[in-house]
Figure 1: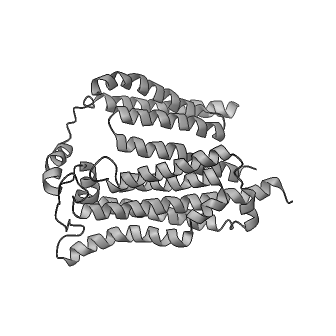
Figure 2 (figure 1 turned 135 degrees about the vertical axis):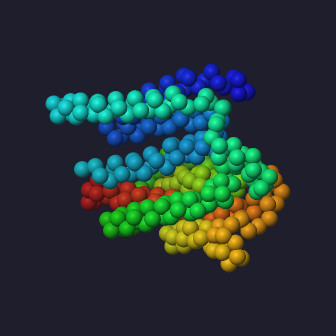
Figure 3 (figure 1 turned 45 degrees about the horizontal axis):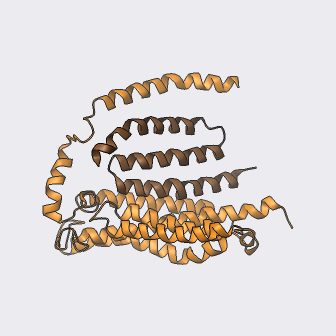
Length: 80
Length: 250
């Protein structure tokens, strides 16, 4: 099981780095939060690969429900 | 445009320095799976025999390093108070605001309700078995709160109001935060150091293990779940208040 997961580490780390750069370079906060969701999901897979299932489960919920919810509300509230 | 470019150029040396520092730091790490920290190995060796907790992380956060967790609890508690103080000043939602938020998709209702139940169940499991299997009160609490937040996504603000009564949530949050302190004081009253593990270690691998860790774990789960729900409630109220504003006065 572990032996089959290890080759995933390098490509996942590269993808996570790319997604993180994407978050930083997204043009508007709205796009940023969507790209951030993708980045978060990549981190979730990374945590599973690194054998931290509890962190992965929490991250999954935080990155798909909790964080976007708060940020989307804040974006809408502050929009002129 | 020119100012943006100047800013980017200004940031480059700092980013370069930070990158070099990180590269230097990471290159010195031991390879994955070969941890060399003294305390980690010590705790791995003693947590199970001493506390009978199969999840060493829970033994660390709720027992060996319990006072730190107590501090973290109150950081969250204070942060939520700050948000509530700021946002409640911005006005309360009126029934007309609430009526504006309608979920029109039946599919999102059905799948959302199933999703809410599933997430809630995962959260309860993470919290309940936090000191036996990977998880814990903090993670469980966050997941429980998010499961309830899915109710808003699936069924709209009116349904959300029914599951996020602040007169229920505020005391629950206080009980969670205070419960941890009470556990520490109970040890003092019993003549032991603050937050000393008072109860017997129990049987490893079952819910009856870890002694006080189980109680601290549930106190944290309650505090974190309630704190997150209070946060969502405040933010979502701000959201429905924009609905009337954006559709104009009808």
